[in-house]
Image (cartoon, rainbow, N blue to C red; front, side, top):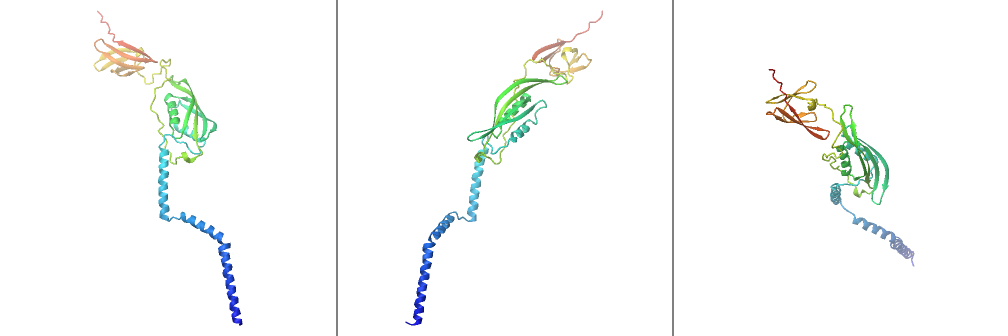
Length: 294
């Protein structure tokens, strides 16, 4: 056998060994890694989208989120997400800033309670207020978009008399408020819009029907109790009070504690209706004519 043939056989053997070695490495040793990579490539291809498809998907999801927010926002009440203790103090300040000077309230934080679905802040609210201010405070708490509930209300009447003897009939109140919130974002509304918090005026059930306090005559009106009818003229009635002040009044004109209701030209009389602390009194003044001397 020539040397050339030997070299050829050796090279063929080496080539066969390299091919067998490469096959063993690729199809046996690397097979597991190749299968793993192919699975990852297949999984990635399932989510392979172009830019237009992603934009379209984003638009659809944005519309869905807006629809869900709209449903939550249109509900009468919402449960806020992660609420601070100071939120209720700020809420009460916004409500009572326009109350009368005779109304005020104090807010005290008591505790935080927990349940399966919600967490609750408990506050005590107490103070003095005019009846309509008190009603507005209760209404605002109960009708607030963020869920709040009033409980354990205690009320009593209160009379305050100013230095000028003007009486003010007030209410002393005390009640608890439960403010609800949640750590779950499913109740959360991004752009929350507050409900209307101003109620219609209400009849003051604490206003006494019979009152001992008579308001002062601040408008300097005619005091019928000490008035004298001087004359009846076509345009009305001419009267005076004990201080010498004169008044020309027509039917329907206001006097201290009441009104002039009628002028009787035939009998030379004028009639008044007065409200004396809840007691209605009709008063008649007659024209006294001087007797002619003989």
